[in-house]
Length: 229
Image 1 (cartoon, rainbow, N blue to C red):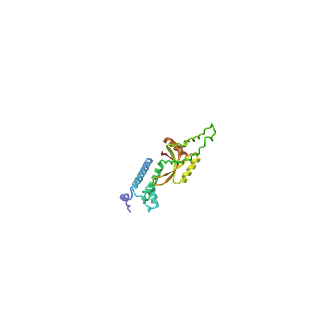
Image 2: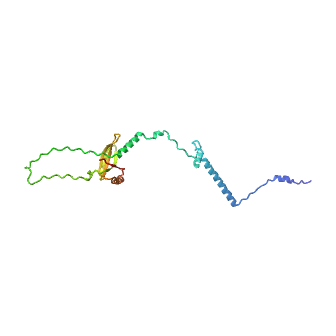
Image 3: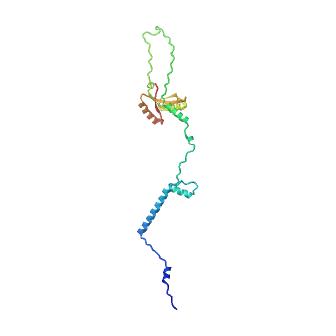
């Protein structure tokens, strides 16, 4: 029997070509660094592009919502206030506050002293009743106190609508050694205010120096006002 030689062409066709790549440590490190840089660049580009997308709605799944929150895309525009006119302040209240400030800054009106009725003339005793050699002693006028000398400026510690509040403040200041006084004024709108005044000063500088110390010690916001003559 004759042995048949195998066909070399058929054996060559049955074999497949194989390729082999070899990378060193430096090449692997460079390839990994490039891959990380490419992924980071793609992630950054995705965030920048996603900034222009509409904000997520409530119908998205919780996973998508968390993803939008992580990427910073869950921004919501401030809703426009409905019925904004209802939040405006009443014009009557604004006018009342302006009138109140005007009443506080007006100088207080000094009350006129009540005229005293002249007393009936006393009967003069005859000269014979007086002992000889003694002249009548004239009564000396009482000395004028410093408080009676009204200055040009005073400190308005506070102003109240209710007189009870003003009286309470007057008593509190009197207990601390001050000499306050209460005064009533009428505003242009017909309202009645009760002021608590402290001190009397010749110059505005003296009044302001006292006001600074007074407000700091008593925790008030007193105003320096000018007195009417």
